[in-house]
Amino acid sequence: MLKIEEMKLRATLFLLLQLIFELSSCTHLRVIPGSTLELPCLSFQTDFDETSITWKFNGEDIDAQSQSGSVRVKKDGSYLSISPVTAANEGGYACLVKSNKIELIRIYNITVDASIGYTIKVEEGSTVHLPCHFPRDSPVLANALWFKETDGGKRTKLNLEDDSAGDDKRLDLLYPFDYDQTMVLKDTTMEDTGIYYCESADGEKLSTVYIIVEVGPTTTPYSCTRFPTAWEPCQDENSRTGEPILQESMAEFSMNLYSYIRESYPSSNVLFSPISISGLLSHLLLGARDHTRKAIERAVCVPHDFHCVHFQMKKLREKLASSLQMASQIYYSPQMNLSESFINQSIEFYEVEPTRLLENSTENTQMINTWVANKTKNKIRHLVDFVSPSTQLMLLNAVSYSGQWMVKFEPKPKKGMFTKLNGDMVKVPLLHHQKYMAAMAYVVELKAQVARFALSGDSSLYILLPRSNKVTDLQQVEERMTDTAVLQMIEHMRTIPPQHIEVTLPQIKLDAQPDMNLLIKKLGLASLFEDANLCGLYTEERVVLDDARHRAFLTLNEQGVEAGSVTSVSFSRSFPAFTALRPFILLLWSDQAKVPLFIGRVTDP
Image 1: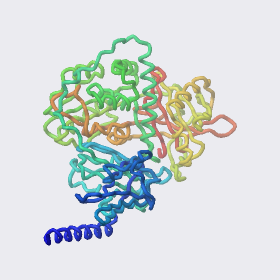
Image 2: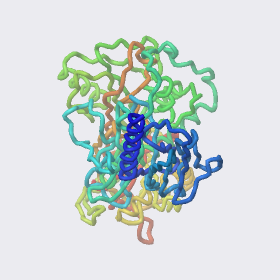
Image 3: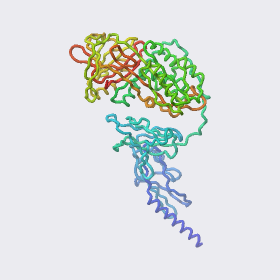
């Protein structure tokens, strides 16, 4: 009997000690709105009879019978469930246990953190993008800093600058030194669950992201058996809707691309060929399947059921052949055997056979640069510096344009002063004509003076001149350059008859190579580098994109526009004049095919 009483005393002592621990270790939890929270009453099991459990919120009883609202008592009071969590659930929760004249209390203090802007659920082993953005009204001088909250509310800085792991590192910035400071987390594990913070170097909070990693389904071996090897045929090659669909898609894609490029290069010279980049991605689309096919179709702005995209791209290239030489190429690992259907359709629609890389990096570099020089008539002789031996897939494109002014400029050499965005002035050689025949108008929708210059090959060069050399005026024009606004501008300018105006343009030679890998990611195609489905190209195992390059070249001289596009404009004096001696935007447009060939910006000729 004494032993039984002694055991009860020890049990009571244990419970009292446990109670002291419970009271001294009040649990503080910080949760986000919309989440689900389950609070256990005790962290240990009891077998006492006549046990009663009650819950209180900020001192008020929570009715165990109530099943309304977000707060519910479960399992006879053993758990309190809050779902979804809202700001009204913030406060103190107490669980009171009464049994055999013993009372135990468990206390929670809940803080609802509404500052968490994103909640992302992701399966274990996958890749997740954590969003973060700098304000648009300030320059990007340094990358943002990322932190993860650890136990006790402490924060650990994440090392994104360590390149020691090479391509295998799990953490990386998607767009370094860009307004978009999204972080990529690869091969997620359960331990990656938590709260992440993005801040500027000055400590300004930019983003808070809550990541929930869940157990994913059992992975299945990679297989292409569900996907057709060849792209489905175009059923109606004579359809009148195919060409307009591609034209509209090309205009939308071009303006999307320009918006991404101007974000990455906010004040420098810019030049690119949207038709060339679109042709390159369309070529890769031949081999894309499932989610990768849909992603590329969204990127190039073509409908998912538009099976005639490759047939229409072929027709477009044939229509432009007299003035524009366009070539894209896919280089692939010597260990791969591309599907026969992909090779045949590449030849059929794009007039190019994908090329197997050589075993030697130096020979590969020379082979690629020689190809580029041949395709651009030696205007671009160098595109790549080095080809990694581990490269699986490379996308390259080259474009060469040569056009003559329909009205020639005066052959006399002349110089003038060009005012840059920062107000500095630089002396430049000029193109000048006292009575040049050109259409000119102020386009209210774009807040720009626009001039249209006719070129050979049924093409036109449009110059969009902002109201001043201030960067804000330039940005205002660029922000208004949607595909709809540009198409309306072109239609409007075609109705304006040419008139005699005094034209002054700077002679220009632009050679630009925008970061294609960055652009591909901005187009929503980051999965090409991580988890691509290219079963129509290669069926044996998963293949990902390693590199993509685009380079554009342009000169503007007395003879005309050569290998690219760019020009300038200005409007002043009572006598009509167009003087482009401050930053401007140029658009080289094919009047025959009704698509943009080149888009550029000149801030420093």
